[in-house]
Length: 171
View: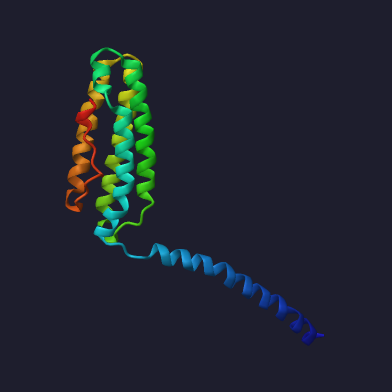
């Protein structure tokens, strides 16, 4: 009776081992892709197209918004800033998914924090304009410009061409 119980467990044990191995293969392959070291040059090359697409789209959205604000058309200008903020946030999300050089992890974490701050201030500028508060919008615009400068200074050594925002063109 003891030997027949042992032999009936062997197929179940074998099946469990096969299932465990099959489950481990995708996990191992995913970890292998994540562990792939990226150098700074490759990282910049991967981010530049995302930044270029965002810059192009936001330039279209924000073109002429400065004139709108000067003419007192605050609500339509505000809506455009809100749209730009949303688009910028999606781009930052895409950028965060790109594998980073491990040596630059701390610097890039700081940079992404500033980018998220810029998104937040774009949104706040838009909301202030939509509510008709031009003075508050200008205060947020000053903060946006400060976040922009901090972001630029954080990654200046990367040599980005497209991953820079010149917010003074719009505010």
